[in-house]
Length: 402
Image (cartoon, rainbow, N blue to C red):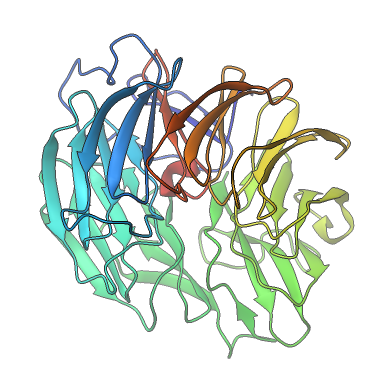
């Protein structure tokens, strides 16, 4: 496997994967190419209310699109997703936008009831549908070509996680502490696990699930015994996939926000107390910790990886590059960032990540700066990188990370 966290070839439908993928590519005009022609492009949303297309080689702006017409600084957490020549993103003005990836022109927008108006969640696009919950208790499924509502449904609490998709099933955690498996065509619940009334009280509230090979990987808090637990669950019914020992527990009084990322057999995840973990999946995962690495601050960034290295941001302002096999530090990068909450994306030997005032492109081998581009104030969302071949690599908090 070359580069992860997810590498989805939109036009050929081949993929190299960390978790899951849409079964079919999203809509878009045939022959449309990413902005910049033959150049790689980085799409990222900034807290100045704009969506940017940047030349991945130079950092130069190709175009920008005003997401929030009210202007001013806003908390833009939703990360862009690419499918079929269109960029999809949730904005801080309650709208879900579809933007032409080549021109930066609006294709459509859909006004939600999201309160206070922004999205913690990022969209996933599959089988011609955009799935995105607002920061409210409602999940939306929109026609990707037109923005027409296909279905929506309410849940007991609001959302802070992003959905994952696998074979017409949608997986999402809600602030009621429950992980839901839904029918992607209707939104009906197929199964649910967690919540204060479930077993010892498993709280799945915030972390986005990750899916690979019919297995859902999800982080939960053990309410009774303060700990963060990585669970493996069946996509069919939510049952433990490998039996009673198919979970890994980290004693912790702090919560979690990051989402897991899975390689062929290793799951990487961070917790807010500042540690990054590598655990082998499958039977007896409880005993299969490979390594852990301590950063200098809380981890809000979700990890990504390539053939040899895992990359993760921390609230100490550093982006860390950790040896994938040993857990030893390879390098760390500090810019002007107060924190790096953005989840990095790695493509062709370059790591892309958002910081407090810039979008950075760093050489993966040593962390030196290839370029930094003024993004107009803090970037908390994660980049989406389009390769010359039309492949989309999404950041880990994106719904299409999987």
